[in-house]
Image 1: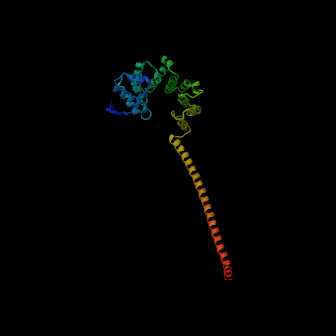
Image 2: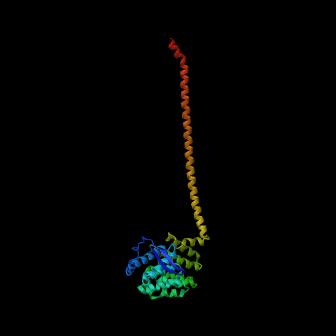
Image 3: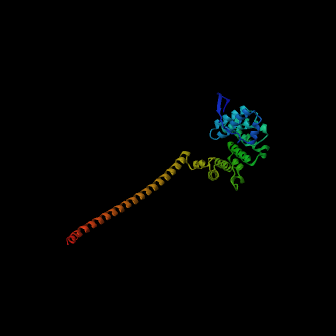
Length: 305
């Protein structure tokens, strides 16, 4: 399936897999797609699926697919939001803010409020981000979005040269929940960055370490920040890890060599024992022959008699 969408350089062709499955899209998105004619719904849904699929590995291609969906169906909240998020993740903050505002006007939902506030930061307007953090809409957000908004507000304080105020915004029980939440690593990382900006390096090290503990996939980069504080570059960390791997391989090879040496020694010992057995057998045969020779005259005499 092929779709065309206008771009700055003319017309861009985007390939869609023939077997692309839109059934994994959220129910509300599928409901919006049903308002379109079937062929257009398939194209728009396909671009939305590809935008979501590529957003981590290729943000620019994800943005192109989201833009294609929005141009095919600009009145759908799903396409406006998808383009807004893709633009945000590719640092197109003005476009992201415009599209997310359009989606909000259609749905009346504030669930992207934290992203919109961060767009204000990206546009160099930290004061506006702080206003959004204090707005009545912020109090209606779910827990996860409220945490994200606190992180954005703390970033805005740091943008204004107020690291201590940023740290205060992030303090509280949410930093040390009984069970780690999906946002725990990001909150701890943001807190560590605020502490570091405030020249509280030892405390920052502790919180980078605690962020790394609940971030096994390394999504926050807390482990890299710890290494930087220890004076290691990313390349040096990689070289250290490679050296450890090489040493382990050498150790394995040495063990294998030792095992092979032991096998050779056993084979040599077995060979020596075999040679001794052969020599004993030959010696026994010679003795029998000698006995026969010695007994030979007597036997002849017996026969003559």
